Length: 342
Ligand code: PEP
Ligand code: MN
Image 1 (tube, rainbow, N blue to C red):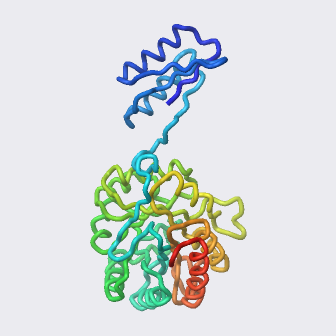
Image 2 (cartoon, helix red, strand yellow):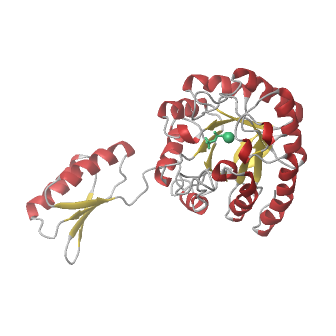
């Protein structure tokens, strides 16, 4: 942290900044400049002190502004943990050399539907089966998911095919149920800042796939991941899934592929991309899936439905089994070109 003083700050005002820093048990460092004096904090600032101290210092007379030097998150930061984190779930490693493809229906609708989707995903090389049982829908009249019945189907199909599973949890009290039926908890974009949910998922210690909110900055996203890590989960997967778009006519969201290299730079956590919600349109999913892998994503989460026209949710962005199989072939070449396997 660095406190920049106004050019006309008095000696008394500078002293007040110095003594305020000292009163928090921290070591101030005077940095004289040509026009302004800056006062740095030479010792590590405890995370709980940073915010109130910044507010106090910013309000002192003679202070121009306060600059943060280190990042607001710690456990999620590469400064704190330089090596890549590899999230190991059964036989699947997310964040290593392999680019991991997660796929399946938006919603679990029936045993037949899930089994058909899962078989297609597995035979094309997908490693993780996705399927929503608790669905965050904009309208209360839209299909809300099969709930526990859907989770039972997911476990059954995942076990039968030997696939790792991921499903969304929407409420803190549902974490134990989700944790007993799925391998990876998914926290959806709408719930990225649901702190009670982040705390409950974090405390469960389970691998958690955290989606970026459609209006969330990178720092807000990493602070949400920090909640999970701070409360006990070590295995966090970040997922970019598109931001609110200027254009709603042609795409549902704007897939922020900048986020992939930015997050990989700032954080040690694996980063995956959801081109299905990112575009909202089946036709555009393959191009953005390939672009994501080329940009360095550690994996993808893709919606696949045996019959997208009949889907109860997100059929317009779901791939058919044939389209998914073709995508997997194309992705392999892209992955190899950037030094990854599929
Ligand atoms: C989903 O994965 O089906 C979903 C609802 O995603 P998001 O939270 O990204 O909208
Ligand atoms: Mn969906």
